[in-house]
Image (cartoon, rainbow over all chains, first blue to last red; front, top):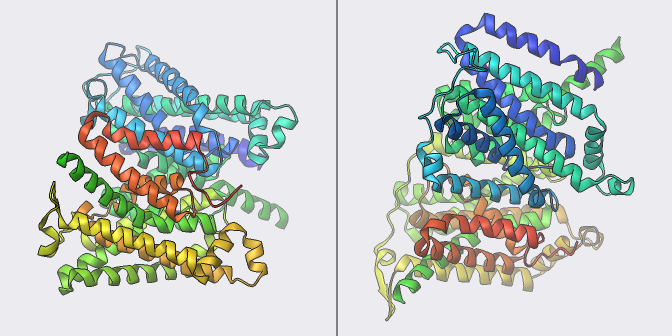
Length: 315
Length: 288
């Protein structure tokens, strides 16, 4: 397990950069895959590390998207500042919500997050002056990144900009997972009753994890809004929440490179199948999900670990 | 006053449908601890069966209902025996993923077979006629739905509270090891109960076409409401589900009509508040 964790980050980065040179016409797709990876990583901090499930994580994604879009409409067009603002707003929202979302067992958590998700969706739908309602927001222009790099039509700036954010988030979460705090989260996942007995403040740890996770999800949403110049209701809808859960789980909960692979793999599948027709994407994802429960229990990362172990035993 | 009664009738008829949709989910959650986010797909299956029978083969409306229920029940039993049985022992997250996948696939299959549009359904004249109840006029279909829901709820309560089958199910819900210990074949009980739940959802789906419409987004459109009915009513409780479904339907209709600005919030707000303050529902059969 340790080998996969440490070793996979650099090859993944090299693959991404190679993609830039090999497939220059697909930069927009790559950008959206990076953003999905950031989002899936934020969710995995909850589900994979702390063992807290949620069917409403898109709430923070959408909040981040709307935050930067609304700020850009009012003159704050510098993308990095927009990202930071989205991070703070989404993290604050997560901090407020944490009191109600981490209570009870998995089923109550799923229901509460589902309910919160639909509440926020309706709220965004009703607050037409702020969010543009069902039409979304597109009447804003982002300035150049750090005042230097303009967003171009080929999507080169967007590519490196979102890749940079992904690398930062990846590194941050990797360090976090290895920190005492990360270990405490895993302890909560494995045995939530025993943690208080060894003096760990479970509620505070979960609140911290939720806040960080919500903040990073907001970052991902803001990235999407900035690079696509659009913020809309589907960014905080149920489908997006369900998708991020699938990505994290198919990738392998708790494994950072696995989650990145799951997000990019599913994101690519969605792009390819949706190009034919949305119904084929739904059929495809449905079959993949049902099969994965039987054949891919540990996700991609679990399968990779098992493969490496088997190769080692043979050697 | 007559306006209020007419809206209430609307809401209660809606609640009856919600009850039929969700009762199977409530039983499977209470009995098998299986989180089935694809339960709405059974209702959709019944709906399409009824549409095909009525519009394609000219089967009379009243006859489509039992056929749709039996067909959906069979689909449920077959699915349970082939795959779903193997998902019961898995962790909750795997169950959620599996059933989301099933719901996606079911919606896509419906989309491929029948197209994304709403399905038309021609109800017989005696159901579309308006009935004068003295103070207020209501369409016959509302009255039919309400009566039908009452009968179905009564039949289910009788089935579970007075028959040997019902006693076995209750025993298995309350204490599975002890039920197995005294010779109840719990796995077979699961299959029958699952099929029964699917059949009731199919019945509800067939009834819903003329009231709520039918298209391939059906499994997810009513998912939240189904889960709410079960969560608030308490998994495994028929009376609890009935009360929850009818009051949710009525509350939803009242707020949407009288306070449309907040109408769509109320239901979800209730869900969140209920889960925070009564995480076990109103009438859970399970003590722990």
